[in-house]
Image: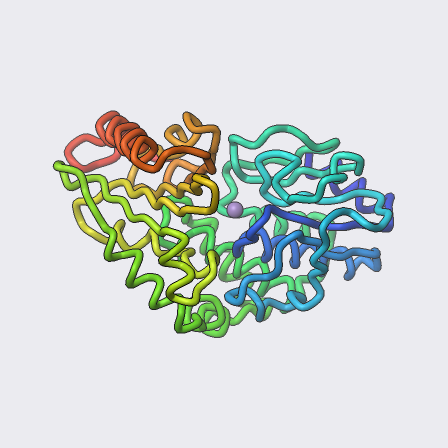
Amino acid sequence: MLGQVIELIEKHERFAITSHIRPDGDSLGSSLALCWILRGLKKDAEVIMCDHVPLAYSKLPGSELVRVVPDIDREYDAVFVIECSDVTRPGLPSLNEQFVVNIDHHSTTALFGDLNWIDSTAAAVGEMIYNLAKAIGSRITPEIASCVYAALLTDTGSFHFSNTTERTFKIASELVKHGAQPAKLSQAIFYSYPYAKILLIGTVLSTLQRDESGRIAWITMTRKAMTESGANEDDSDGVINYPLTVGDVEAVAFFRELQDSTYRISLRSKNRVNVARVAEQFGGGGHCNAAGFTIKADYDHLSKDVISKLKEAVQTSPVVNGREIKPR
Ligand SMILES: [Mn+2]
């Protein structure tokens, strides 16, 4: 599949790169890195998104070049779609009329592209983009290295998650050699929060509850909590990791109220507790330890339902005497 992607790039000139709504570190880092690679090859390339670049990623090289658009408004030979579960995820209605290259590391992704390059062994799409850069013979510039590093850093939870492997550190090491600055990137991503975010975290954490086993915890963010703290939805990103820092907690649900009884639910877990399977039961998807879905539902029913599915996931997870049965 990588071979076909390289052939497509070599034969064509005009490209766009896009990713899902509310882009994160992997979607932006990967999109920007691919844009730098294509421009380095003297191709006409740009990143288009339907949402703005969140503050945390505003210092990534090229982030100011991201064009925020409501739909595809130029002609391209192909559009690269980074880590999207389906063709509607970027929120660009006429994307399905384009030649689409679907690049993803989620095994749950639909094969919606004209070309589909899926590698579920990659810790982040950034790792795939880095492989592409090397395979196509790009010089790894500090811009490419920084963007790929940001993708790896965020998708591995700062190298905390189980997708962090020997290969991750090897790539990270190469990226630093090519000009990525770990402390500078971490400061931009994790130590540049707006004050309102911390106020919001306080309010959301005050909703913390856990089940009788103490292994499942959940938090909720209402619209009211968000507006009263002066925060926006991006500011609630990362809050879900706090309940997971409790030693006994193995799975966490974060209920975010959007509007009209619609909720975005994020799920996180430790070890082999598979929350992707839980998200799939509600029409979503993701990875073993990080997944999510959006649903229109009554909060009381929804939360009961999600928590009971999480209990099943925790009880059936393949852990014996605290040790995983089979490593990935
Ligand atoms: Mn990713």
